[in-house]
Image (cartoon, rainbow, N blue to C red; front, side):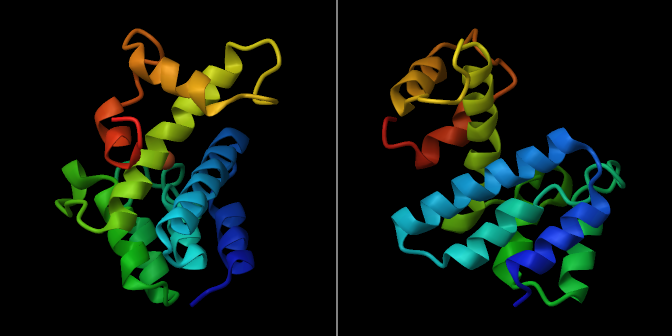
Length: 158
Ligand SMILES: [Fe+2]
């Protein structure tokens, strides 16, 4: 399996936008945290988080098929490829099935909610607590672009 360093090198070669790079790293951090919580393999899950939007900038019309083809050629595990395909089920026809698939989908949205919550606080993400994010999660008028339905399957606070 490719290492995290190799994955990061690939990310830096394909993605220039600093905001998108940050988003991919934020999703990686969240997915890794859930891997620890669920007792799953953190390295494998982390790769799915880190690379899920690899082709978003270069090939938006084919996202994430280009990325998956590239990652398949580089020997990435099937569960990583499946999760990346399933995070755009509407386009790929691959439905989220595994715990990793659902976690990636949820973290893709959840990190958006965390970032939006941090942005409206005077101290930003520093000392941001989970309860503040949960409160914003319940407010449908806040960060409307974040799909609560995709976050709920992994949320302890359903
Ligand atoms: Fe994403």
